[in-house]
Length: 472
Image 1 (spheres, rainbow, N blue to C red):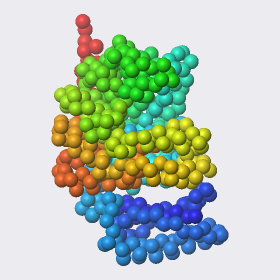
Image 2: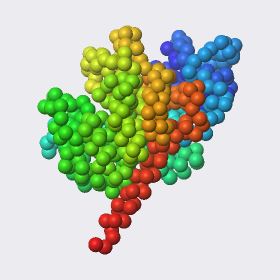
Image 3: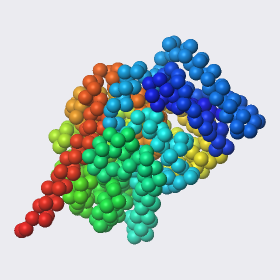
Image 4: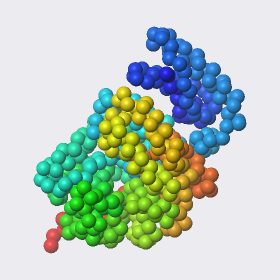
């Protein structure tokens, strides 16, 4: 089969990408068409590539004509008016959480090409995603010298992968470490690439590693992940590591030192995944505002990963931001169990949780996704962009529009109907506009709030460094 996908890159222009699955063959063509995205299946013809390309180009023109005829009868979240698209294009769109696999930025998973992963540079361009934190994620494990050494190497591999990406694509993307970097890079028409660390287990018990990671470009760190670590308690203790409900009852003594050093360096403290006591401790002990980089609100969906009203009020009091994540079971109560159902399918295919390289590139891709559709998505409802914005609405009503932002959590078991890859990013803007958010409020939600926090963290770091340098 040949997939033809139309991705809007201009109010009246589509980038058509032709891909023959399992062969790696693809070509691109830009056409003038109405504002509609679609996927069409065409039987594969046994022709040479030269003749196949001619055939597909001809067929694509026919498809364009068909689209123009029916477009006035179609309603979908993905259709933007000229005004909506122009407004979205003028925003600074910053995604606070994009995961990567271990072999990211290699020929296997090449961010320069439109591939099966949810985020690559072509999709960022198509969806108007100007900047993103790419994540150095490390899995929680046992706390011993061998695991500390292993997790350090795992983290460094991902740092290298992100830097490799920016080195390979200097004309399209640029590495950023400050809020002013982000503004400069995006104003020049390039994508700003930042680094966040997910799981403080990456530093083990070594503050020097935290400093090393900062020098490599990390500008936020999620203190914990699934399972307690030496910094604090997780919202999701793991029995396989012998976790009790709480170990530290908040931040550990080492955890308080970590927060203090993050403040001094200018690294944002991230409290997503943290237990309530750990989150409250982190916010209280931090000299700078903190973020929840990819969470949602428990008043709408009771989930261990979501933030309650008391936590929201503390975020507001200290100038922080919650970044609402595009994760089905965070956003929709009747989507609970979807992650566990996906895990069942994965185990049947011999996949582990973050085995994205095999999922997107292996021979199992088609059958794996067919099984997800039949065994999971047909039985458990998925969240939509409307559910995502419901959570934004709640935060705005509760603590104000200055304290909320957006995170896709793409390529980390996330994505919702309407925002399932970076190319669909403008759909969120459309829904925010539909609900009556002002231009300035949409700008705050999409990036300005997080940039404000980042700027404040940088300012406080300079103050703390000056205090350390002052004669005593």
